[in-house]
Length: 268
Length: 289
Ligand SMILES: Nc1ncnc2c1ncn2[C@@H]1O[C@H](COP(=O)(O)OP(=O)(O)O)[C@@H](O)[C@H]1O
Ligand SMILES: [Mg+2]
Image 1 (tube, rainbow over the protein chains, first blue to last red):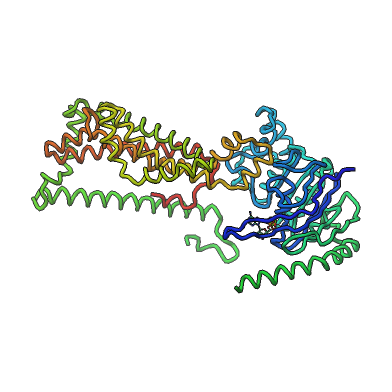
Image 2: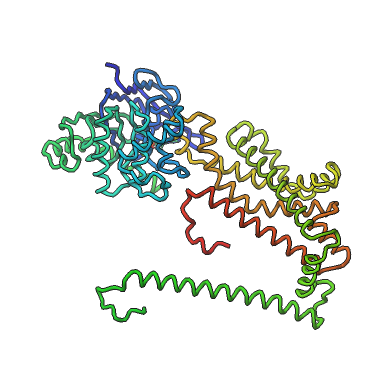
């Protein structure tokens, strides 16, 4: 079976404003199977968002190969959904038109797109808010809009960049469960970036730990917890803490490295 | 507090609080209106008084009652150039046409250069140079090249408007959040869609902000154009009053221009509220001037 996503020996360098070269990712290998829900954890600045940008085709790799659905990525790949780390819904569009954007860009008429959008708005629990503008919504509701906006294109690959990190704990658990049930119906391959290890384990089939920058995959752990899951209840299981302990051992070192560096550069 | 009966742990009902707040705000509004009238009375009164008793020469500085009389004559009878409404209409036409031409050119070229790095790099130096010359002087050039009819006034107004709108449109395009562009591209937007659905709406708040200033500039352009040679218009009216050493006439003409600008400002604000409904209401919009 061809993997849904494959990164082979990928390196990403950025030109810094001062003219230097910054290596964000080095020799990164990562494989996601079709229908697999993967989580990527790592300290801040280790290159998690960059990894998603490479998969989506928003950024080209400096070295190595990026394959999506077996094909090398050149420019924006088809069949990809991307929920960004910071708000990316269009502030000048209503909820309805935000969600309808994807189908319209793919050639549907406004009428068709809107009726598809109504369907998705109700699936993410926002019925009745079709005519609101984003500024009139709470943070959690805006994330729901972003989710519907991505899922309406029925992507085979769904990239999510710390989508729930700005939400309060209760809303977050709610959204996590809803994400799992929406995903169960689509069976897309998911790459879910988070800095929260508990969230990663609760959601994913596999957790990748990225080392402190330049990022590379330090280890990957399967999460053999059964589905369907409830993210709140699953945390009580003994197996959950066992997996958590195992991964945390790895992650802690990286977080400490990253923390020490920030302290150093902060002191300089 | 007006609710002395409310014991601790039994706060006044919310309706009471909001009613209190509304009343306080209304009182504050009334105070402001009162003070505004007071300022006007003081300024106009001392102007009238000092010119009447001769400390200030009304020949040079006019007189409020004289200005009012002048306006009344213009309205009820007619001006040296013909009926007043005709002068207002002529200037308004020049202003609005110049405003539209300048705005359209400014938006189109601003978006074009904002979207295209090469064009921006090539033309930026010329635009900066053109922006550095005092552009009202171009009115003289237009009077020569386009003649004394409406075209030279429209051109003068348009050139003043163009630069302001251009810089705002350009900046607005440059400031579009990269995140929103990335999102639109992921969702499947092509270049044309990206421009019409993300770049322009996002730049619109910048562009509209510039329209407030630029209508005033269009008015300046039209009036300056008339000064360089015209037979009709409020600017020409002011010019002819000045020729006759009629200070009150100059002031009366200025009042007319101010009224036109205020009217346009109201229209643009209404337009803005319609076009950028998606923006949260400005915090502290009451302090706006
Ligand atoms: N466009 C860019 N130009 C220069 N440096 C960048 C750019 N994007 C990201 N970086 C750098 O790459 C590193 C990884 O960034 P990122 O992928 O956003 O980290 P994470 O999402 O894991 O917090 C950071 O140090 C960041 O400063
Ligand atoms: Mg990030």
